[in-house]
Image 1 (cartoon, helix red, strand yellow):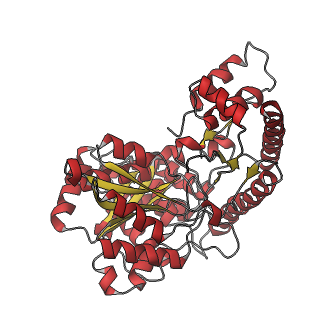
Image 2 (cartoon, helix red, strand yellow):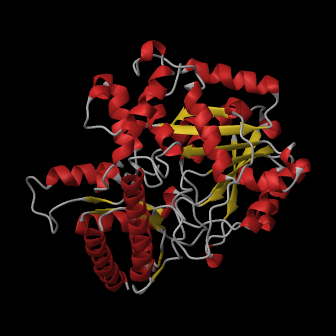
Image 3 (cartoon, helix red, strand yellow):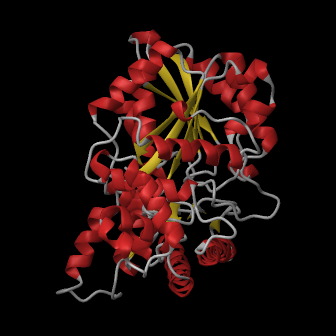
Length: 459
């Protein structure tokens, strides 16, 4: 669903070779694929994965000793000291230990057990697996899964595939896409009439909306989940991507622990991270992990069985995940370069977030909330009634009609808000902020010119 425009985008890219267009390239601003947009890989991560893939390089003076040390540790955890062997279904033990240590450091000493860590094929694989374990029943007893609207369409797709019931709760656009517990309660109470709501999904920082939830908001959500006996899914893949002053990433695990044993010993929580976002942008490695706490031992056994069906996550992705959670530290040879590259990516993204917000808010008929985190803008667009009528005549959602016109006239590929869900009568699109600054400026200017002409045409 979130790739709706990519097929027309590919068609138009092919047409560029033989048909004259008012643009020379298709700018694929529809997917958060950092390296495809020109972001450079983190040297240390690639060095370690290269050493793991081709261990003969361990004798090369071209690679730093701290990278070799990590590669040797990972290889020792592999059967036959080879990345080509299957691993345990939960993933390589030493990498799960590194993930647990990372979580403890991130959360200021909150304990993490490697046995609760599952390495996954990106975060998506873990989310799908947990939903499979949690969904049951039929008719009014069918499991209801509460998801934010707008949402990342992995959730609606997985819920539909598993024949569960999607329970929408709306984020507050007028209040920077904040999550309001009263809205959670409304959605839950209404859903009880037709299903059994058991799962509450949170995306923080938000995709596609880019908000960063406050500590108070997370406490309220945890209390609500505890009160209603809901299983919490915390999608935290953008935890490194926080840009706005006054905003800070708080993990659900940390806040849950700090709320005391009554909460920490009872609320079931699965949280997710990935190599694909953050400062790494390593989408192709398909590396990720989930930490699952307070799962009943019998259900945990079923989860391990379910994961064993797919044998193991990609081992190169496991190695990439290890570097995310076990990067160079002060005093190590690669530390200075690693920090420089990491900060460069994140500072650049922060600049692009502000630039995008500012430029969108200068366009008449467009409003964009602050991009506090993640790597997307989700501006609200005014679509005149004449354009809405024409969209209906083409059997298209108005924002899909808008996005197709934008693609055909400018070569810019974005995703209509209807692909993510939005309040009735409002229209949006999602656009990544990943292009290089100069290309992003050109892109935003083109959107501005297009939007003004669109308003004039359909006024």
